[in-house]
Image (cartoon, rainbow, N blue to C red):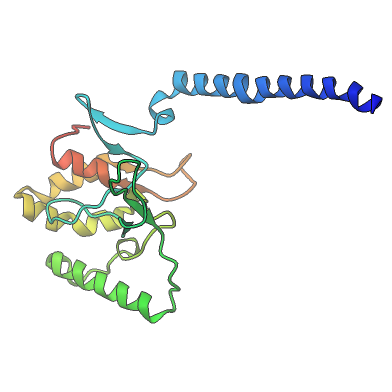
Length: 202
């Protein structure tokens, strides 16, 4: 019992020290450095223009009209969760269907038919796989350059602008490989659509 009483104060001191170091000092230091060096990324990479927030560069948004670029397939859940005021919260989740299942094949076939109908100028072109499949998170904000190019003719026609103008916007929103060698080039769908709408200029 006496040994326990001797150890307890030391344990309490160590607990307080590590709580201060790891819970407050380290966290505050990392947060401060992040806010100082790259505040945009530290705050969620929010796209804000003239005080209005349009979304995050890191989260996909669902566009379905012909005048905008379409992103990855999003599996939206608007029935499971509500906030404290009872308002519906939207969640996107990945699909757990096996690529070998009949249901998965039927879904892909339906998506292919929809894309073919919306993009008749590209009738003979192969549809990039990322336009007919969900991402791992269900919220991927990017598509491949091929998937973006597949939609150029449709967008240009719907907006009454040239295909070259749409391609120029896509190019501005294309991110290269990390360090020039890692990963693949990607196109940020939200940025493309905000530029098409004139919200963003570069």
